[in-house]
Every structure is written in structure tokens, then in C-alpha cells.
Image (cartoon, rainbow, N blue to C red; front, side, top):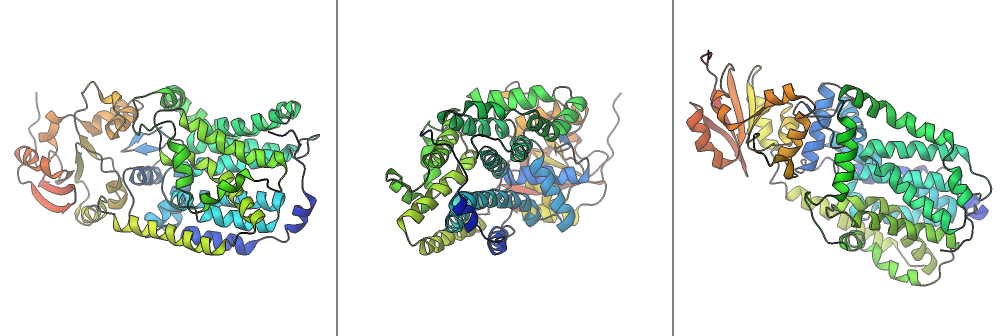
Length: 504
């Protein structure tokens, strides 16, 4: 990487012009237009929307899954979604508003950066490239934590880059903003919110011989801003749940990164293929990067290293999910925009085709909604009476509490005494882990199979969601069991309650 220092481009700054309200409005409309068209996808959207729904009913500080403290992920997404549900109501649009807002933040941070460094034309191209890339478009309307941490990492990197634009003087205002954004990244998905910005910025500065400026990034004001964002929630959780730090930091970060007992095992090269594939058709122009671009070497080096750093970091663990690589979307879009601008390529037709591809993918998701339990949950909501008990059998139906507006935890009947629960990365381990932080609540909601016959005790009626193959076993234990509704892969069953004998 060249050692040319990065300095502001006065021509690009003058070309920035007035506030680009039109671009902001079009971006917002593009991201919001389709977020309410389809039911929640399983498991992720049902799980995380359900957690936000439970926080809305109880404490906004403690994420909960079936009433149990759920610390797989930090709370930023949940806070945005519960706020949207409080304002707009409980539905898929509100559940996806958080990801859409975070996606907007990611795209807008890139737009403002490109306008400052490369002028308005490049900024508009970069914004269109990013907004119509399938990975970004679907990620910005998918309820999970990946778009949030990508947005925070992108904004943090760009804020810190602006802080060090002058190789002689570090702008403390932008440095503090960058550290605060790293803090939000930690609240979005954990330690990668600070690790990845450092992994991008540090080597980039060192490659230019700017080691003194890299050390200046550790200014106490920046560290204080980071602590002010991160410590209130994490400290409160550790104070309330003494095992929080060990679980959230050691188990959910270091063990997940180094372990091999998690799902989605993929080869090392997975993200090197997935990232350009999910930015088609735009990524096809990156072959022109081998030619010289009229861009300062340090600036081009930032974008190239940023992509390599993110792809390389997430290629190391055995477990890989597509959304992990989203923090590389912004530099990829910047590179494509610079190539298109330098070559004078007509890009509006490609943008239209890419937009249609994105909308087609949403249409495909609308059509392929057969796994949703929305209709079953709506039936449950319409017929359930106060005091009725709800139970799930040998599965956790993530979207049912959300769509049925359940305000109390459900009973989950399964093999909770099995010694190998901790070895399988699935719904059962999620609930078992959560029960570690509230054993009494766990004992009240996580039932082993021998308690099956007690489901209809001391309740006006018991409602059961189970797979069709469980019906015979349930009928033998629960007199009067009837089928109320069936969807693909799940049934809603009902049995009258009864007064049970009290044991000695």
C-alpha cells in the first residue's frame, strides 16, 4: 500500500453542494416500501422480533426469549424494534423498521463520505450501487443483527478516517464520534463492533507510516465515549446476572469464533465467493480494478484493505453465515462506483435491472412463506381466553408469540434432561442457556416429557402447538384433545382443562 497521506480534496468538498434531501428521501422510500409485505421468516426473524415483543411487555433492558434472559446478542436491534412497535403497532413492518433504519444509516454514511472524498457524482453512483445490491437490500429488511453491526462498523470507520484526514492533526470531534459508533457496534452485535474498525484503520495507517497518528486514536476522550455507550447496559446486566460477562464475551464471542461445534460450517473461501455473488450485477465491474484509477493510492488502499480485512476475518471461523460479511458492502460499493465513474460507464440501466432483481427476491420470499405460523397464531389469538395455558411440544415456534400477542411465557415440553443439549447449536440450547440466568423461570416453563400429562391441569383450556407426528402421543396424555388448525409442519391443538389431584 502506498504511503501517500490522505488529505481532504477541496474540489470534492466544493462539489458537495447543498444538503441532498432528494437522495435521502428516495433511499428511505426504497428501503421502506417492501418491508411489510411478507411474514416473518424462521428462525431468525421470528426469534428476534419475538424478543423485542417480550421486551415491550416487560423490561426494555433485558432481552428475553420465552420469559428467560436471552444474551446471545446485545440489545440495539431490540430497542429500535420495540420503539417501532410502541409507535406503530405490532406487525412485520414495525419489526423490520429497525433493520431498515440501520440500513439507511449505513448507506447514508457511505454517501456522505463519497461526496466528501470523490464528489457528488461518485456519491450518487455509490449510493445506487449499495442500495440495489441484493445482500444490502434484503439485509436492510431482515430482522437480525447483521445489518446493525455493519452500519455501526461502516460509520465508525468513516468517522475515524475523517478524524485522521490531516496527517499532522487528528480531529478529536470525529475521533470521539468514531469511538461512540464503535460502542454502538458493540451494542449491535458484540466485540466485533470495536475489533473490526481497529482491524481496518490500524493497518491502513501503519502502511502509510503514520504510527504516531494511530497511537493518537487512543485519546482518553475517545475511550470515554466508548465506555459511556457500552458500560451502562453491559454493567447493568453483569450486576443483575453475575455470569453475564463470561457468557456474553467468552462463550458467545471467543468460543464461537474458535469453536467447531456450531452450525453452518463452510469452506474458507465461502465469503470470497458470496460477497461478489450477492452484489451482482455490480460486482462484475470490479475486474477493471487492475487498471489505474484516478484516486489517491491511500484512498484506494483503504477500500481494498477494508474488503480484505472483513472477508479474511470472517473466513477464519468454521461457522459462516451470509450476513457476517455485510461490513464489507460499503467499500465494495465505493470501488464499483469509482470504476464506473472512471470508465464513464452508463449505469442507470444496470441500476434498473438490479432494482428489479432486488424486488424479485422480495417477491420470492413472499411466495415462499409456507414455513410461517402466522395464520395458526392468529387463530390462537382469536380463540384463547384469559387463564388458558399455551404449550409448544419439542420445538420452539418463534413467530407464534409475536403473531398471537402472547404476554406470558409458553410451556415448552422436550427432553431437557438430555446431557448433550449444550453440544447442539439449536433452539433447545438457546432456551437452556437462557434458563441458566433464571433457573426458577426455567423450571416453570421448560418441562420434561414426564410432565406432559399435567399440561391441562388448573387451566380453563390448554392450547398446544406441535408437529403432526406428535398428535397421537398428546392425545394419549390429554383427554379431549382436538385439532383446531393445521399449517405446513405444525398443528394447533386444544384440550379442556381439568382439576388435578394434589400429590402427597
